[in-house]
Image (cartoon, rainbow, N blue to C red):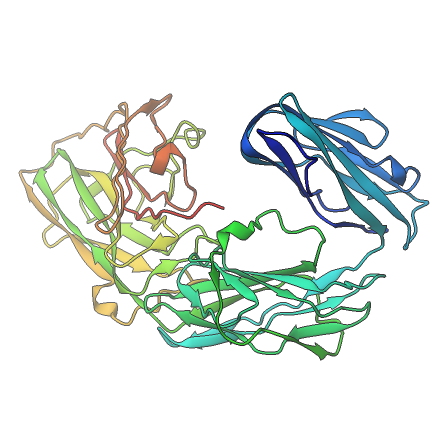
Length: 503
């Protein structure tokens, strides 16, 4: 929207969507509105939004930092403005009297103490187009590094046409690359940002379309699991909150991607999402240890699992909690001592990833608490072990176990189990006393291929651990294992932290 003429200095530019489609039931989307100071900084910036032409047809739910100034009116005080800023003023709900075909408008007036006033407008249509997508099928058996295809499809189940065409936004998990094949599509360098394409084909109510050529993806050689997803909206309508055209600097050079008509039906559920799995595998190597000391002593051992590749267990996008588990069984004649008591988990305590929650158990199952478990990464647990007596030939074990929902498809079972051996001297005391819980300490270190490290220590009431994690945040999927010993708990995790592009 073009600002009024001004002799010199800063001008304001409003960026408002052309159309707002209000459903006849439920609630409409958040309004997309942006304001930019061009030619310099602006001060005392404020935007008044007036939707009073929809009186009797809609009600307003004010959001963001805006305040209501009357029926269907808000004021958004921006203050000093350097560059651009997004405003999230409200969303609308239809009244019982609203019917498909009703129209109105949302008017904007932006002012500043040192820039000319500008105005803008968004047209409102009740019962506009409603574009719903078709889910992608789940794909399996993709060879490492192979190409696979996806075909987006959508239908207009609303009461009005998308007469100016539609927009398509494609987003994917890490570990795949999308071919930059079409001149009407704009591509990002990051898969999770993806690509967007514009189609000028009018879409009538009741019609359905799919792309006339599939999108082509290449899976990275180490990729084991991932997803593809997409959304569609009318040209000029409300875009997804994550959509920013500046995130897509590359334009395709091939033939334009087009649409072809398909039969509308019940397959269009609105969830344009699908998972995929390759045939790649990850070899888990169990890491054993030796319990060495005198009878009656309490010593430390460190055990765990290493991913020796070649596959990467990368599925942070799922509801999975781990990349598998490892089961620790202490040798005969020894006892794992100490364990956090009830209520000692969570902020500011540790995320306890081993069960059971007691000392002296016959075995412990500990999470490989990372959902981005890459080749070379390891997850280890330090246990405090008391040597109670000498048992000739005694041997415990560490055994790696796959996550059944996301198996690592390990093809080398020989290294899935490692021994915990004992090298003890002396004889058992006549009445060994139990260990007394002491204040715990905790450390966290990144794995061999991790891009960063973190350390921390602390205590919690009753013997709990202080929380640690990348950037100081407890990450549910990044926590690993707890070590218990004679009242001393040591927490160690090896995980890889990876930069992620901002939106």
